[in-house]
Length: 595
Image (cartoon, rainbow, N blue to C red; front, side, top):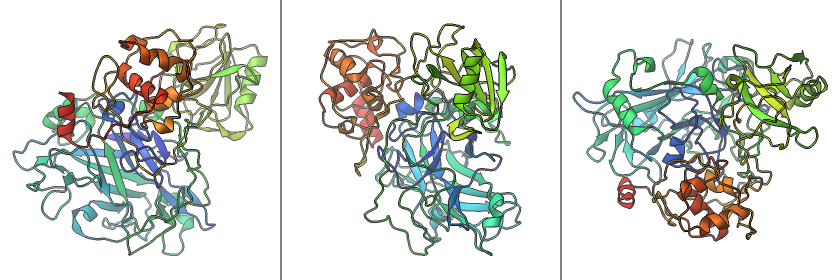
């Protein structure tokens, strides 16, 4: 399965460090439900994926590879074929490696695991060590378990094979490994399962092909210049994380029926597919205010370079000040200065979206394009390829930004590298304000014929006040049980999302407590957002006081909340904090609580 794009690159790891900033940078592919902490229900509610199978909203991630340049700086190494380093995905293999006559099983709901060890700096033997290796393409050399000290003309492919034997009861474990095992024998990728791990799962295997050849000039003689995000110069610490987001029934059907020797996903009738362009449109804004791309003076976090052979250790008394906050804006806020609003990232492949007027320059900025279109009497301005500007008075439905999807407008403006000016076949779209003037953080609303203003449909995530997380204790994952009525403090299953609309509540109410005091999840963050259309201090009291709060009472702007029960629980915590619910680690706990 190809994952042409990444949804994020930052210091997040909801498996190892849920709810807090993780120790090092990861590159994440898969569903847009990814976040600092996440549940199976949040994964399934994703509106897109950077991987090609529509029924799979799982997330897959690995540490970012950097080059340590001769001048002492660090740069992220892009994947092959992504010279602008704007997409950067991976390939995920689902492999049939069962014994003869054995029926392999799909991953259960809520399942997650980790393969590899970020602190390892030498080859320790065993299947877990054999599961990590590197292929130096074009060098005519065998695969190695570390980053080789010879150049790779075709790129360096990092590979990690995951355990495929499950104990059948734990969805996770304290070290995120003990609930699973590699098969018995000498090979990590095949064999029978040990008796303690009787359930043989479908095998998964990651490949990331890095374009290392573009940094050949940075080698110091025969010593390679590459380092993984956690400071690992050896490569023995390469690792991968997996959080299941599959429609489990579909995955099981694919496991049972998609047996073509080619291994091509296109030959699997059990699944449907996104195009590569749709995958590359699936991105998430950063929620950590730190630089992880471009030229860096040091690796993000506290990650000094270590080369072993002794095991690396976390830095004691790390003075890391990074925090989780509001999503970074992928637009320029002109609502006050020019009375123009950001509508979203629209499609411009094929038929040109805007044909009214155009200009291009090597000093293009968002402000310059908007001024040009405004002076020419147009109500829409679109930027593309970093330096091109197009104008019009209408936006067709086919070119309208997709609701809840950030899009691939990641190309920096030629005149200001802190601004985004579209991409190939993608327009950063701005609109002259009408009665309202609000930017869209992710996705967009319905097309608005001129001269009426565009209506932004996703506003709540653009909070100007960050939600700060400084605790070193992982926060619990919140899930809920009941489908109707107020939510119980501890719960296990989230109901489906609602699309109903609520009339804004205007009665006065106490100011909610800080979201820091509540379970860390995207719904709490969004309700706590002080720039929401209906702030929590106005919305929550009436909602939580209702005898029977139905799904129709969930505002459409709360698109990160899965339904009325989760909203009710979040409001209850924000207005009057309660004890955080206990994490459900065991499959039997989930079944018992749901029954």
